[in-house]
Image: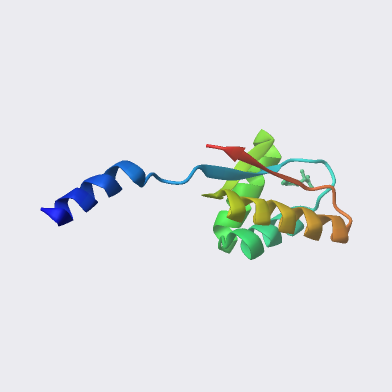
Length: 98
Ligand code: TYC
């Protein structure tokens, strides 16, 4: 009986965390190969998936790279932005609440 009460309370309290899409935005200057490398390094996509996502950004203006909790999404955005800036590319990466 005591176990049942605990389980019922957890049922009400545990809800999934808010999730955030990390999105890459198109520009006219960042090389396609650099974007593909970023997708492999920070979003753990294989060669084929990375090329597909890069081309979607190039053709449609943006694409989702992955969906993460807030802290993980913020870290990805910062890592990508810092890496692009250091390489001299204007690549933009943003997060959006799902
Ligand atoms: N449009 C860029 C080019 O023609 C390629 C590109 C793809 C840039 C995706 C940014 O997020 C991006 N070189």
